[in-house]
Image (cartoon, rainbow, N blue to C red; front, side):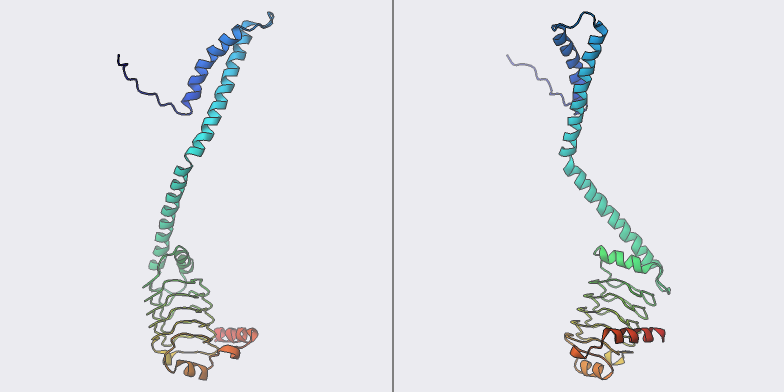
Length: 264
């Protein structure tokens, strides 16, 4: 004879201890009723003790159930945290772009230093960004993607652009005094009127740089180990104060020149 099918109840780890306590109270009472206890103890005290024992067991089961739930759902929490982090990063990037775009064509920083640094730290490409005339002194953009960026007349004094991609970037009349451009990629970059005094170009790729003969200043420009420099560029730069190898000036002398140049 086939028995009827009864669906299996699905109890949570909060409901199960409560139900178990309902069953446990009579069971404990029945168990204790067979045991002898002092006749001078009131019956209500006996039942109170029984209920307290059942509640203690229920509390323990609830605690164990909660611990198990925390352990079992750790993967869900991690996924939720990762998704929340992605959403927060997208929101931060959107706000940073709003700051950058709203300040286009305006002088000063306009909050763009922090915004650009945050975008670069989040791995966002800055290719094609327009920053003409911006005051970005000391900005930290190592390994930034700035290809085809418009950086005309921008103040990048002391900027960290090490390893940055500046291919086809327009640096016309940009002030790069003391900037770090080591290992940067400058293929096809426009350097007309750019101030490159005390800039470190060590290991930078200078393939097909444009208007290099019209660079505004190359005093103490470090050109050690530059790659793919146009024919005649190194000789031209060294004649006008650039340095390489053992010819590098002392740090104190470089700082003095930087301060003098900044004051002009």
